[in-house]
Length: 181
Image (spheres, rainbow, N blue to C red):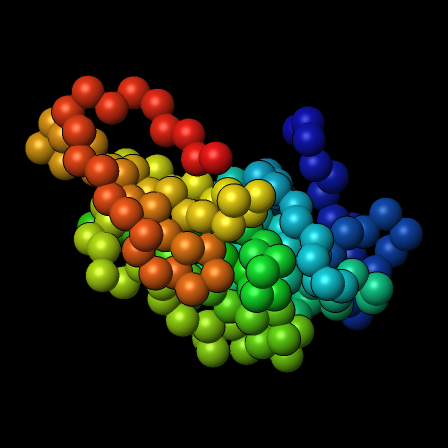
């Protein structure tokens, strides 16, 4: 099999030189294909690894210790991760596997360092966001842009990146391009 190496374990669960993981019961070991990394983001001593299937882990940059998982439920896959320098938070955009709803959350780096991503909160709650809504974080202009097709009409809303307040909304049938300057 190409792309990964089978783990070699001794019967007392001590790693051998070519092993990659430790498991508690080596008899039940099944070869797994490692998940594909989608993106890696580093901010304030924390490294975020977002995998293609939507799982996101946070690690300490200096020790590589796993701090937490950012997903707020097993039925939600994180699609986007963004470090907001303006208020030292991480923004995540996740999609529900059950109803395709989109959830945006903000979590303080401090909460993540303490392994408590659950202390973060939802943003853009007033919006009924569903897939295929497009959400873009513009750190230069400090804006969040959300565009979603609804009944053959594009609705674009712009939010402040620091306060998450709605700044303005555009509803247009012929919308082709969005630029913020």
